[in-house]
Length: 577
Image 1: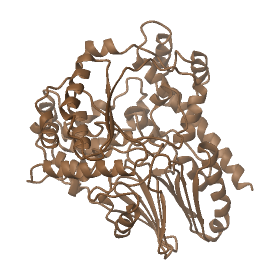
Image 2: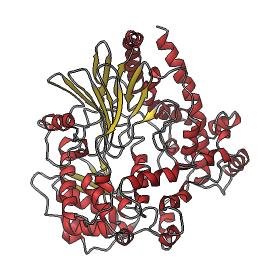
Image 3: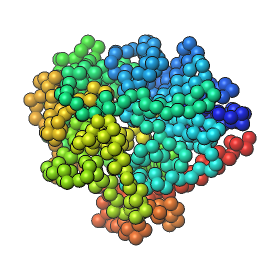
Image 4: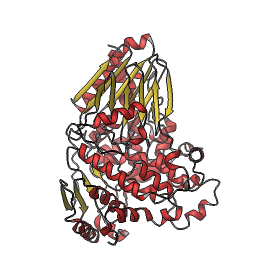
């Protein structure tokens, strides 16, 4: 992982302590993720650390110094308007950062700018997809994409944020500016945290989201979407060490993404899951049509893959240990269903249809949805049905009180008083679930550029429900693909291609039960009786993945409590030096 970190000491006592705490941060990073191309900066009041562990993935460095300025990023931000190469990358990026034009960068990162005058700016990307957390106390201002290293700078012993965990239980990710730990917050979308040379703190926005999402008379500019997203694809391709994987199925979103990527001249290994024969046939037809249209220098291959049931060799206890070492609780419990490995230095981009939801009307695409929404006080309240938990305690359910009202108010402030406010909720909340576990520093959601987002919010509700957007994009990117039929798997097809496997319980039942024998934190959030019912079900033939999913969530919550205790021990150890 490419840990990115900055701290500004605000008092004389904090400045004296800063070298010791920085040493603890570097030790923690190396203990978890190994040695790397480490950059460390320390003066009397400011410490920076950037561990570029992905030189086998990115051709652009994540640390750059020029004219007394230092720039450090969690992974290379991708320019959306101009083609770049590794040689001219930072000469093009640095002026954008200095001018504050951060909305012209793809949401895939968080960055730090330490200016020559001693001031510091920390920024989150436009949509908050790149992990960034911060601590502000009387003594320190610190920020990082790794929660654990910020433990050294919090006031007093760390405590679990029970209200935030309650929302996590219902949503499946930490909402708003939550983290699992009280006092450690997430820097939200398009936000900057500025620290003056004297330690004064100010928050602001580098991009007004109204420009991206607010209602207006303009129609979607499909040509701009194609042009800008092709530029994004070419820059991703140019800065990647390895050839990117592009997924192509029989559906709309992946066809749209692949058509933009390929027609822009980017190299790719196109992958299609061959389990569903009809889907594989459509993908092969599409690639056959494209054959012979490759741009000069474009490398292309198409593979059908037939995945075997994965062999899970890692004990469940080790999976949890690795997951919490990396994510400190801010990730999905589903991760422990397979081996959880610390990312190495090599990785490649995987490009799929992630992000397509905001062009389809995620919360209102079913027949009758709009009629039901019309009966509510405000549209965002309709999303509440997606945040219910049958196992949740009353205290957990109350954690969402006011949540949907708050998001409707935010949407209205950004010019979305109607049903499209539900897409604003998706964009600024659920969308971030893709980034909260992207610690391999090789992550990018191609469908997050400003032209794409703007065009999605320029669609009418009917156009979203009718899925007009991807058809229009494909027709412009690779016209010959527009007449090929789509395929969507039916339930019966999916059952044929999937074998039920309880990947947590079946692979380590002894540890599974051991966790539940001595519960710690989860009974505060989940009903004991219902958990006990699921524990009985899990041993029989009637157990379903949904039952295991809730049990995984309970185990995850208990590990948050245990992990915080470990972090407190580590903080005491470092401060005792």
